Amino acid sequence: MKINLAYFSATYTTQRIIRQVAAQFGTDAIREYDITQQLPTEEIRLGKDELLILGAPVYSGRIPERAQEAFRYLKGEGTPVVVIAVYGNREYEDALVEMKDLIEANGFRLISAAAFVAQHSIFSHVATGRPDAKDMRLAAEYGKQLAALLDNAEAIEALPLPAIKGNRPYRDIGPSHPMPIRVEEECNACGTCVELCPYQAISAADPRVTDVAQCRSCGRCIVVCPLQVRRFSGEFFDMVGQKFAVALAARKEPELFF
Ligand SMILES: Cc1cc2nc3c(=O)[nH]c(=O)nc-3n(C[C@H](O)[C@H](O)[C@H](O)COP(=O)(O)O)c2cc1C
Image 1: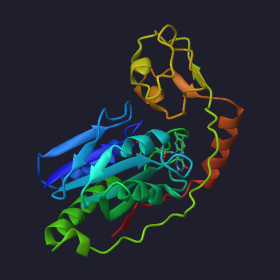
Image 2: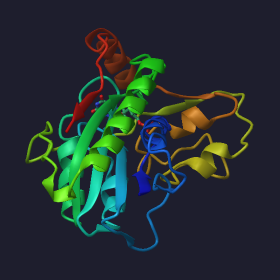
Image 3: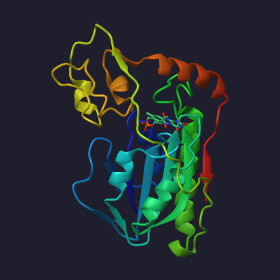
Image 4: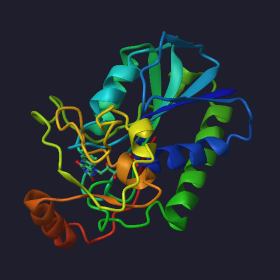
């Protein structure tokens, strides 16, 4: 069976988790559509004998707009799909339902879903270091369970419909207000952040300047900076950060739905 991965992953945790799941199928026939930096240029058609694993981080209880747009390019023919939401130990709210609705409207059939936990890409003191060894073990076990599910299925349509969590209508998240980014003096304008920003929000002439109208606070510029001189800052960031340190201290575990 050909495995297809399609994902948005600004700080690479979604990518790590879905690659770990896919690796358990024991095949080299894995195609990746990383849509973090650009939309597909044309429709991607997948047959019934293929599997799609769709991954997105949770942004305000939903999936990022870029993922919503990009996933519309995927077209199935009753093709089985697994949806995976990765969240920063707060909540994933409607992200799984949103992914399911979007992809089923394009001819795919949901066979399973999962919510995994990773370090919060804005508040890095929340779920720091996750996915950790335990999470990665669970992702591997999940991949094996999926492979067995498909191996043993008489027909995709005969598989049970997973009862996932989430609500419709989805959470209304309103306009985004990016967190200011502080850049230390040591920035040598190497351009790594400019090149890798999913939203082309950083000035090539002066990477200290971020266009707040484009920025989505995805955190990529911070994790890719070779000198580690970029960080979120500001009163709102400090206030929410303190609140989250207390409210989100308890470890949440991945949830799997079949
Ligand atoms: C704009 C934004 C909004 C977020 N909203 C949530 C949220 O509602 N719940 C949560 O638990 N984590 C939230 N997070 C954290 C991310 O879901 C989490 O860090 C995820 O692992 C990021 O995935 P990535 O590494 O693939 O980019 C948010 C992160 C960003 C950047």
